[in-house]
Length: 64
Length: 406
Image (cartoon, rainbow over all chains, first blue to last red; front, side, top):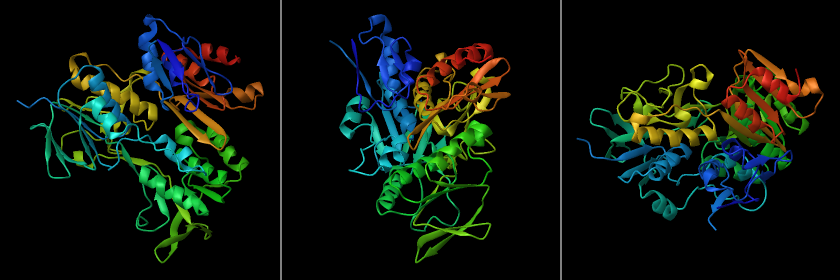
């Protein structure tokens, strides 16, 4: 499982960080840093919640 | 016995999320999504932001195509149809086309409609901004270089003002209160937001009362004030708040709030009528994280979270959970982003940025010995950290320590 951010859509609103602080962190300039691009299955639920919560639909989970 | 059918009335964000969640959690029965607008479900935040920007045609805010919706939801879509009544004894929703929908579980997500200036509804050039059709009309007016007057210095009106200024158009914002946004963020914070208007050439006038509009041949020409002046205008945008859409529930037995006629729910968003839950802008609920304070929130995140929760609870009432999301909203003005988490009613508000001599605004809100709110302007890295603190009922001392003050 891999997290993909569409940088054109992301505006750094931070909902993903609220859902999954181990995976996402908004930076001072408003850009999003993915802390762990390939989370394990143990983090699937919070990764999915983060994807679902994004107001700009900038996040997707890709199964490799 | 009523046939099994999950019905969602209201097809904006909360309603869409309710329908999606029903399928995601394994509900396989009949599902109907009823929407009063003719459009498929669409996203509202862009309407007062990117949608108003100059340049090529704005991006379509529709969430999903009809085909995508059908594949994802397998739902009966009833767009352009609004609910006209609810009979809880027969468990049916009456619709504007004369038909009825039987439900076994129902989520009411009818949202709210923008308040207008009485008597000006027919005047060309006067708009509210709530729907896609409103945004199309306002964008068209901005394209023609309209002199813009915004009535109400709330978030929507302020975003419209910012959009017009970005096009270099003359903009006046009229606010009845001495300081804008006092109810949503507090006085000092309202002043900090107001400063953004003035820094960008918007003529913000507070403590003024609109007495009427002037017009010529059915088209607005200006806004008259109680001091006798008239401000010339080609476009007037009224941003004076919204009212929950609940007229159709008047005789249903649902409890409506005496102040605004929103639906009064319990903490699990249940309305008290069997099988009927509410979500989003229409719903009052006691927030357990804030001493059971009854609140009705008009935020994107609230609509999304409550839509999901109301569906889960309606389909599985035995395991219903309380709505616990920490309120969060954002607003984009000029090149700045205002972000707020928590609740604004507080016993103490500390403007931390001022104490530290920092330019970028940050204030913390306290109730008892807990942090219960935070507002920032252009500090995107910090706001969610405070949101998590509020969610975990962190102490005031912890929040101050994190902020770097004592």
